[in-house]
Image 1: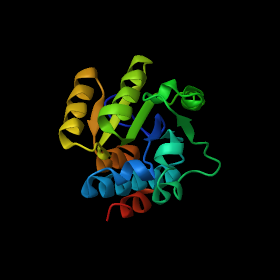
Image 2: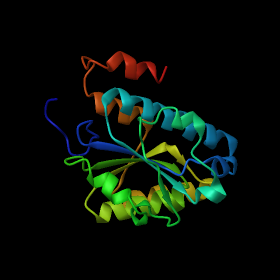
Image 3: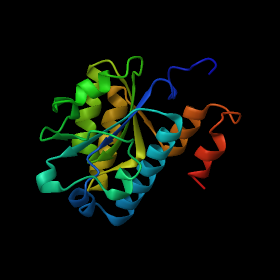
Length: 190
């Protein structure tokens, strides 16, 4: 769809990665942050479905932290296998790298989730090390402590991740108001 800028998300190059947005973990987040992460991750999941982008979801120790929030799983692609893990970096989980690498040519990982300073940060750092271009959606990640989230965003920027926001990702995926899904995607943010 036209020329590409390496610093922008591109629908044809993106994979959406939802990290550990689980019921017991979200309950520990400040209420406003919890609602924002669930709302914005849901918007990104719906847009990914419309644009046919691959989605990967992880759950950190689901026996203890519960399953992914139902408000998000309702937007998961059919037959999505959630990657269960105990390691903090998603890439250490069995099946994560295979799921990521299954989509040849998709070298951009768009990250949302919890907690920003632990699992999101470690996953982003590992993905950067593997040569992926990492975009962390700042208004779709949270930590129990806001100072920890801010520190994670600073560290991610220093490491070369692109820190962005939900609306920027959507409009970068679309690139043009003439996109066939423009109205459907922009309706998600009204």
